[in-house]
Each structure stands twice: as C-alpha cells, then as structure tokens.
Image 1 (spheres, protein in one colour):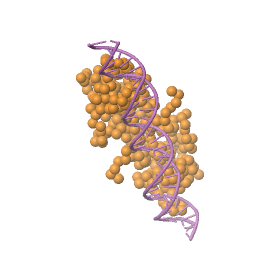
Image 2: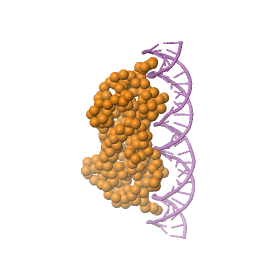
Image 3: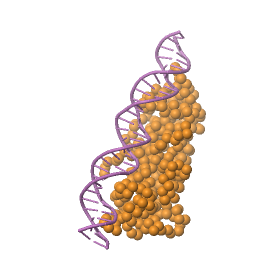
Image 4: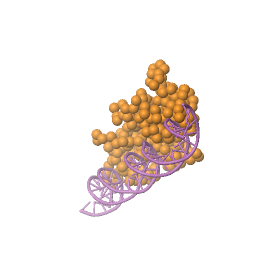
Length: 152
Length: 152
DNA sequence: ATAATTACTACAAGGATACTAGGATATGGG
DNA sequence: CCCATATCCTAGTATCCTTGTAGTAATTAT
C-alpha cells in the first residue's frame, strides 16, 4: 500500500482555496485602493480566468469585493482586509462548512446512536473558530512580517 | 436562495461516520468482551450489512477490531476503547485528513502565493488535534454520564 | 454436514467538483 | 461615436469520488 488514494475527506474545495489565494493576491496588487483586472490575478496565480470570473461573482454577491466594469475596470475589496475572515470567504464559495450532513434540525438519519452528534458539532465549531479568526490582513502580515508590501 | 445545495466541503465521509457509530454500538453491545455479529450492528444502526463488512475489514487491517469467522463469530475490539481515537478510525477508513491537496512535500501547485500553506497545515493540525483527543471510551462516557451501560 | 459468519473482489449509480464556452453588458479613452 | 477592455451571466461537461450492491470463497461452532 505505497499508493495514496486521492481523497476528499475534510477537504476545502479548490474554489474556496482559489478564492482566498486570489483575494490575497488582489490585496498585494493594490486592490484595496484601485480595481485590478481579473486577467492579472489569473496570470499571477495561474488560475483559469474564466473560473476566476465565477469565483469573483460570488465574492461580489457577498460584498467581499466590488466590481467595476468596462475599460480600466476590475475588482477591489468591498471592505477592509481586516474584516474579511476566511470563514466568510469560504461561506461565500461553498456555503457553511459541513462536517456531517447531520447537525440538529437538518435531515438527520435518526439513527439510534444519534448521541454522537455533539462530536460533529464540536468539530464544526472548532473549524469555524479557526477560520473565523484569520483575516486576509493576517495573511498579508504573516507573509511579510508586518512590513507593508506591494507587487507591481 | 432558500435552497441549500448539498455540499461536501470539509465533510467527514459517511464511511468514517458509520465506522465510529458502529464501533460505538459494538462496544455498547459488549464487543469489548465477546464477538458480535455484523448483522446485529447493521440492524441496530440501520446500515447496509454488506457495506459494514467493508468497513470492518478496514478496521481489522488497522487492528482496531479483530474478526472471528464461522458460527458465533463476529467482531470485537482489538484493543481497549480508551486507546481508540477517532482520528485513528478515520485514518483507517479514509487515510489522513486532507484539508487541501497541498501540504509541503505533496504534489503542490507551486503557485506563487504558496505562502498561504501554513493556513491549511494549521487547520489540519487543529482538526487532527480535536479528533486525536476523543476516544471511543469518551463517547461511551459522554452518552451515559460515566455510568456503565449495556444493550441487550 | 450445515448454518452462520467473516473475507475478498468487482462493479455500478449518482452527484459534486472543477472546469470550459459563449455571449451580453458596460465604460473609459481615442 | 467606436472600440478595446472588462465584468456579468448562463449552460454544459468530463472526471472523479462516494456510497453503496452483489457474488463467492473460506472458516468454524454445533
């Protein structure tokens, strides 16, 4: 068993990861001050521009970014990087984190040993808490040790 | 948007959840002392017996349970409930928890802003830590407030 | 023997992810 | 006013993984 099957357990979707990376890149490119075109981000992050379009449309719906159309248009942050948490971004992409299908009211299996559910609720809370306490600004500071940085 | 799409982000596979539920049930049925047939567990937990077979084969490979064949056979714990962590069970089912494809050595995308990976490593650690600190025995005690309990 | 029960392997349906594609709409600069 | 540049919006689709089902062989208590 030297092979490692490609699994999806506990996985954060690539859409969410792309979103986070892209917002991060956006900020580094000055997207907190002026609109940046998707083409640039796509190139910088090596992500399909068409795919990015979809991602940013969702981000826009969640007010995380604002889009301006037309020439010289692009996207910029919809609010300060300090107040954009990873949880929020992930929520915008894929909805709430779901460890199991079964959290209280949801369509529970009603199995007898449902006394185990506190377990998944607890895990969800743990994960949510982690993601809620990291902001885009944190990413920036982590990357540059507090210094301000820009990418041309 | 009243509809909730069925997502898989951060999901623990049903296989893993079934496994945990089943071991829990096994213990409650006395599986720490004598072998219990899968049919019973399947019925009690309302899980396909055939599917359970596969699950328990994996559990066996990981020494979490021992199987005894033939009439009056079944499965029993391979070690004390106190030393079976959820992480171990999940690992047996689906391998290590993978938040993203990209953890250090793995097949990383090599994207420029890879300075974000500490994020996923951190999340993985958080999750692993949570799962590592809960044992089957904990489930039992949580369910019965410390009292001993049995199911006929 | 025989009924019970695990052990092992193969395969299939369904759904979600991760895109690709094409066009509509808007806007700043010449 | 035109046109290049961008976002905006909707469909469609290949691939993979999950979640099983199915059949058969091997083993053992009674």
